[in-house]
Amino acid sequence: MRSREFLVPVTDDAQVKVVLVNPPSPPEFRVSRGLMGGFGMAVNAELLYPPIELAHVASVLEEDGHEVAIHDSDALALDVAGALEAVCALEPGFVCLDSSSTSLDQDLTLARSIRERTGVPVAILGSQVTFTPGEIFEDNAVDLVVRGEPEWTVRDIARRVVAGGALEGIEGTSWKRVDGDIVHEAERDKIGDLDAMPIPARHLLDNAVYRFPGIEGPVTTVKSSRGCPFDCSFCGYTLAQGLRFRFRSPVHVVRELVDLYKDHGLRHVVFRDPIFTTRKDRVHAICGGIRAEGLTELEWQCETAVKTLDRELLENMARSGCRHISLGVESGNAEIQKKYCGNKLNDLDKAHEVFRVCREVGIETRAFCMIGFPEETPEMADETIDLVDSLDPDQVQFCAVTAYPGTPLYQMLRGKREFDYATMTGFQALEGNEHMTASAIEAKIREAYRRFYGRPKRLLRQLKKPGMLAGRLARYFTLFRRRA
Image 1 (cartoon, rainbow, N blue to C red):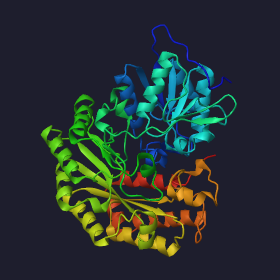
Image 2: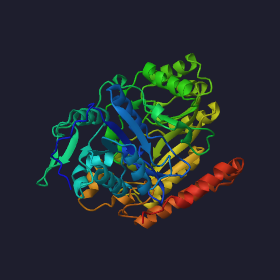
Image 3: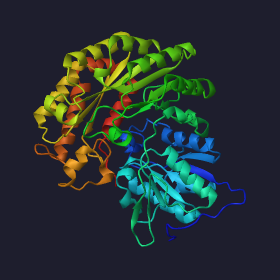
Image 4: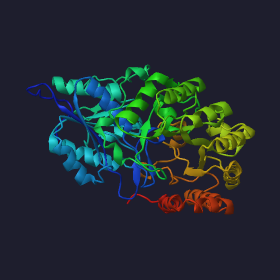
């Protein structure tokens, strides 16, 4: 196996092709690597988001003069063997793979195979490898770990590869010496001016294949901001993007919407911001820009918090094509809210008003909820289920509390427990707590789904959309699949 300390030979034209790879999902379930702040999450097989993080990296590389290709194994329905052949066929000079917690072993298997077959530098990015970089080099699968926001770091690696220089000393990377020592280079500052980045390179994606359950036609995603002011103990987004809210200007966001709408023919957008409506004035301006540009067929959805919404904003969003909002409810217990959930839902009257106004203006809602916090009893979990029933969203998602590496919750529990990253699907309970075993937590999640969707008025609504009901039933029966 080649050592990490090497010089990359310079090609005749001093150019190499950079291939960015979204590896295949495990056979048991699809993984969406951009979810959970880049730690990834098991999702419905009918959900296929574009690897927008790689498209952001690609646009920066192209602007810097590099030839770039994006390989998306899931979009091509490939396994690891098929992905290896496809990536090698692109004749890369440098490869960078995305990763997730639950697929990490498989991601590294693919990385190692590419490295051995091609002999070119191989890097890996993502939140999991950012916060456990030393563990990634155990089997010599990669040359570099890209820690934190990847755009400028991958660009700097590509510049080194083109120049034939040593890959040491690049901010935001980790690597392994010949003697086995792991070197963690200096942290790279988070990107302060998001408008300085070009819009994602969607021309490198097969945009027609990406989809979202219940939506007819292709779907794409947009990241209009980074960072979240709510310091939830479990949150991968806060960990990966920071507490400081950094945003793209409305003009820059609308420019991307115009590109995807007019140049790529896309009509459905999922905003992937942790809290899309953190700045109401910015959202009002984006809504105005959508109408001013004549994007009349654009339909979009977002994720946000109850306390950042009001009637005026919701009405404007609905007029501008917003059709769905996912809201972080997390827990119906006040103490759990304060201790673990950033106290995002401290006004239940406000919560009921927001869900009611959404119904009035024609915006569907989904409530994000979690079960299995430390110290949470079955009775506390029932408070969450009861709250969701009273809020009456159109959809609900119950997840098992997961301590992703680097989060405050992980630091709190790490001294007592060892975690198997393959179990970090978002629905599988890693461990029990003081009052519920892991199997009891999963049973409570199943109970929560049955109670919510089994209510007579809910069943009547679902029967009006049999296709969506069938999709939800299929998802329910695959939620707790485990890696073989």
